[in-house]
Amino acid sequence: MARTDDEYDYLFKVVLIGDSGVGKSNLLSRFTRNEFNLESKSTIGVEFATRSIQTEGKTIKAQIWDTAGQERYRAITSAYYRGAVGALLVYDITKRLTFEGIERWLKELTDNADPNIVIALVGNKADLQHLRAVSADDGTALSAKHRVSFIETSALDGSNVEEAFTRILTEIYRIASSKTLDDKGTGEQFNPSSQTIQINQNTAEDNKPKSSKCC
Image (cartoon, rainbow, N blue to C red; front, side):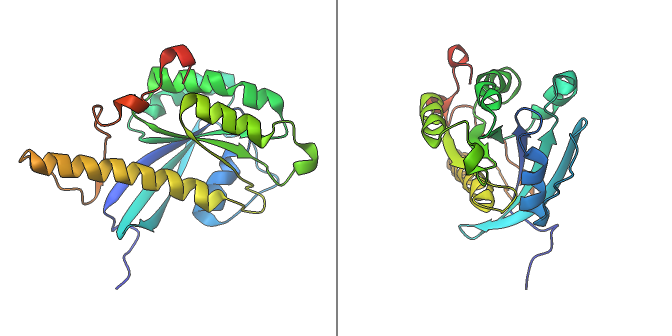
Protein backbone atom coordinates (compact mmCIF):
# COMPACT_ATOMS: atom_id res chain seq x y z
CA MET A 1 0.00 0.00 0.00
CA ALA A 2 1.35 3.44 -0.93
CA ARG A 3 2.12 5.84 1.84
CA THR A 4 0.27 9.09 2.21
CA ASP A 5 2.09 12.42 2.42
CA ASP A 6 1.71 12.28 6.20
CA GLU A 7 3.66 9.02 6.46
CA TYR A 8 7.41 9.25 6.36
CA ASP A 9 10.52 7.97 8.08
CA TYR A 10 12.45 11.23 8.24
CA LEU A 11 11.54 14.91 7.97
CA PHE A 12 14.28 17.32 6.92
CA LYS A 13 14.18 21.09 6.69
CA VAL A 14 16.15 22.48 3.75
CA VAL A 15 16.57 26.17 2.91
CA LEU A 16 17.08 27.80 -0.46
CA ILE A 17 19.30 30.88 -0.26
CA GLY A 18 20.97 33.25 -2.69
CA ASP A 19 20.48 36.64 -4.26
CA SER A 20 17.12 37.83 -5.50
CA GLY A 21 16.23 36.71 -9.01
CA VAL A 22 18.44 33.62 -9.23
CA GLY A 23 15.42 31.32 -9.53
CA LYS A 24 15.01 29.91 -6.02
CA SER A 25 11.21 30.03 -6.09
CA ASN A 26 11.06 28.28 -9.46
CA LEU A 27 13.47 25.59 -8.26
CA LEU A 28 11.10 25.03 -5.35
CA SER A 29 8.00 24.88 -7.54
CA ARG A 30 9.71 22.68 -10.15
CA PHE A 31 10.77 20.14 -7.53
CA THR A 32 7.60 20.12 -5.42
CA ARG A 33 4.90 20.70 -8.08
CA ASN A 34 6.73 20.29 -11.40
CA GLU A 35 5.73 23.84 -12.30
CA PHE A 36 7.58 26.87 -13.65
CA ASN A 37 6.26 30.43 -13.72
CA LEU A 38 7.93 32.91 -16.05
CA GLU A 39 6.03 35.72 -14.33
CA SER A 40 7.07 34.78 -10.79
CA LYS A 41 7.73 37.75 -8.53
CA SER A 42 10.35 38.17 -5.84
CA THR A 43 9.55 36.27 -2.68
CA ILE A 44 8.61 38.50 0.24
CA GLY A 45 9.68 36.98 3.54
CA VAL A 46 9.60 33.18 3.45
CA GLU A 47 7.45 30.47 1.91
CA PHE A 48 7.82 26.71 1.95
CA ALA A 49 6.57 23.57 0.26
CA THR A 50 7.00 19.86 0.92
CA ARG A 51 7.67 16.76 -1.09
CA SER A 52 8.51 13.18 -0.16
CA ILE A 53 11.06 11.02 -1.95
CA GLN A 54 12.26 7.46 -1.58
CA THR A 55 15.92 6.83 -0.85
CA GLU A 56 17.57 3.61 0.26
CA GLY A 57 14.20 2.13 1.17
CA LYS A 58 13.14 5.06 3.37
CA THR A 59 10.55 7.76 2.83
CA ILE A 60 12.15 11.17 3.24
CA LYS A 61 9.86 14.17 3.55
CA ALA A 62 11.56 17.43 2.63
CA GLN A 63 10.24 20.71 4.00
CA ILE A 64 11.88 23.24 1.69
CA TRP A 65 11.97 26.89 2.66
CA ASP A 66 12.42 29.63 0.07
CA THR A 67 14.11 32.60 1.72
CA ALA A 68 13.88 36.03 0.17
CA GLY A 69 17.08 37.27 -1.41
CA GLN A 70 16.59 41.00 -1.01
CA GLU A 71 18.79 42.67 1.59
CA ARG A 72 15.84 44.33 3.32
CA TYR A 73 14.36 40.94 4.20
CA ARG A 74 17.50 39.31 5.57
CA ALA A 75 16.61 40.21 9.17
CA ILE A 76 13.42 38.19 8.69
CA THR A 77 14.91 35.20 6.93
CA SER A 78 17.88 34.73 9.26
CA ALA A 79 15.58 33.19 11.87
CA TYR A 80 14.53 30.52 9.41
CA TYR A 81 17.98 28.91 9.31
CA ARG A 82 17.15 27.47 12.71
CA GLY A 83 16.47 23.74 12.44
CA ALA A 84 17.66 23.48 8.85
CA VAL A 85 19.86 20.48 8.10
CA GLY A 86 20.45 21.32 4.44
CA ALA A 87 20.94 24.40 2.27
CA LEU A 88 20.92 24.89 -1.48
CA LEU A 89 23.03 27.95 -2.21
CA VAL A 90 21.84 29.25 -5.58
CA TYR A 91 23.33 31.66 -8.09
CA ASP A 92 22.43 32.61 -11.67
CA ILE A 93 25.02 31.46 -14.22
CA THR A 94 24.17 34.50 -16.38
CA LYS A 95 24.83 37.05 -13.63
CA ARG A 96 28.37 37.18 -12.30
CA LEU A 97 27.39 39.32 -9.31
CA THR A 98 25.14 36.56 -7.95
CA PHE A 99 28.10 34.18 -8.05
CA GLU A 100 30.36 36.72 -6.34
CA GLY A 101 27.75 37.04 -3.61
CA ILE A 102 28.10 33.37 -2.70
CA GLU A 103 30.85 34.07 -0.18
CA ARG A 104 28.55 36.44 1.71
CA TRP A 105 25.76 33.86 1.80
CA LEU A 106 28.19 31.22 3.02
CA LYS A 107 29.24 33.58 5.80
CA GLU A 108 25.58 34.07 6.72
CA LEU A 109 25.15 30.30 6.91
CA THR A 110 28.15 30.07 9.21
CA ASP A 111 26.69 32.75 11.47
CA ASN A 112 23.11 31.47 11.60
CA ALA A 113 22.87 27.78 10.76
CA ASP A 114 23.92 24.55 12.43
CA PRO A 115 27.68 24.14 11.93
CA ASN A 116 27.15 20.77 10.26
CA ILE A 117 24.46 21.81 7.81
CA VAL A 118 24.83 20.03 4.45
CA ILE A 119 25.44 22.58 1.69
CA ALA A 120 25.10 22.27 -2.08
CA LEU A 121 26.17 24.97 -4.52
CA VAL A 122 23.69 25.32 -7.38
CA GLY A 123 24.26 27.24 -10.61
CA ASN A 124 20.77 27.85 -11.96
CA LYS A 125 19.46 28.90 -15.40
CA ALA A 126 21.75 26.47 -17.21
CA ASP A 127 19.38 26.63 -20.18
CA LEU A 128 20.73 30.14 -20.94
CA GLN A 129 24.12 28.95 -22.18
CA HIS A 130 24.39 31.81 -24.68
CA LEU A 131 24.25 34.29 -21.78
CA ARG A 132 26.60 32.42 -19.46
CA ALA A 133 28.78 34.67 -17.29
CA VAL A 134 29.94 32.03 -14.81
CA SER A 135 31.67 28.92 -16.12
CA ALA A 136 31.06 25.46 -14.74
CA ASP A 137 34.77 25.40 -13.86
CA ASP A 138 34.21 28.47 -11.67
CA GLY A 139 31.46 26.66 -9.81
CA THR A 140 33.55 23.53 -9.44
CA ALA A 141 36.49 25.51 -8.07
CA LEU A 142 34.36 27.35 -5.52
CA SER A 143 32.69 24.15 -4.35
CA ALA A 144 36.09 22.49 -3.95
CA LYS A 145 37.38 25.46 -1.97
CA HIS A 146 34.54 25.17 0.52
CA ARG A 147 34.18 21.38 0.34
CA VAL A 148 30.55 21.39 -0.77
CA SER A 149 28.84 19.67 -3.68
CA PHE A 150 28.09 21.48 -6.93
CA ILE A 151 25.52 21.08 -9.68
CA GLU A 152 24.08 23.21 -12.46
CA THR A 153 20.32 23.21 -12.95
CA SER A 154 17.55 24.71 -15.05
CA ALA A 155 14.25 25.33 -13.31
CA LEU A 156 12.84 26.22 -16.74
CA ASP A 157 13.38 22.85 -18.41
CA GLY A 158 13.86 20.83 -15.21
CA SER A 159 17.44 19.78 -15.92
CA ASN A 160 19.14 18.38 -12.79
CA VAL A 161 16.52 19.85 -10.43
CA GLU A 162 15.46 16.42 -9.20
CA GLU A 163 19.11 15.39 -8.90
CA ALA A 164 20.04 18.50 -6.89
CA PHE A 165 17.39 17.95 -4.24
CA THR A 166 17.68 14.16 -4.16
CA ARG A 167 21.45 14.35 -3.75
CA ILE A 168 21.37 16.67 -0.75
CA LEU A 169 18.46 14.82 0.90
CA THR A 170 20.25 11.50 0.49
CA GLU A 171 23.43 12.94 2.03
CA ILE A 172 21.44 14.31 4.99
CA TYR A 173 19.70 10.96 5.40
CA ARG A 174 23.00 9.09 5.52
CA ILE A 175 24.31 11.40 8.22
CA ALA A 176 21.03 11.17 10.16
CA SER A 177 20.82 7.39 9.91
CA SER A 178 24.42 7.12 11.07
CA LYS A 179 23.49 9.23 14.09
CA THR A 180 20.58 6.89 14.75
CA LEU A 181 22.91 3.89 14.76
CA ASP A 182 25.30 5.72 17.10
CA ASP A 183 22.45 6.45 19.50
CA LYS A 184 21.37 2.82 19.47
CA GLY A 185 24.93 1.76 20.19
CA THR A 186 24.99 3.85 23.35
CA GLY A 187 21.68 2.40 24.50
CA GLU A 188 19.75 5.65 24.09
CA GLN A 189 16.14 5.46 23.02
CA PHE A 190 15.71 7.00 19.58
CA ASN A 191 12.87 6.57 17.13
CA PRO A 192 13.57 8.03 13.68
CA SER A 193 9.98 7.66 12.51
CA SER A 194 8.33 11.00 11.76
CA GLN A 195 11.12 12.97 13.38
CA THR A 196 13.00 16.02 12.25
CA ILE A 197 16.58 14.88 12.53
CA GLN A 198 19.21 17.29 13.79
CA ILE A 199 22.69 16.42 12.64
CA ASN A 200 25.01 15.50 15.48
CA GLN A 201 27.55 18.29 15.82
CA ASN A 202 30.29 15.73 16.42
CA THR A 203 29.65 13.61 13.34
CA ALA A 204 30.87 15.97 10.65
CA GLU A 205 33.37 18.25 12.35
CA ASP A 206 35.83 17.84 9.50
CA ASN A 207 33.24 19.26 7.12
CA LYS A 208 32.38 22.20 9.34
CA PRO A 209 32.59 25.45 7.36
CA LYS A 210 35.37 27.70 8.58
CA SER A 211 34.56 31.33 9.28
CA SER A 212 37.80 32.45 7.70
CA LYS A 213 36.59 31.00 4.43
CA CYS A 214 33.19 32.60 4.79
CA CYS A 215 31.34 29.31 4.43
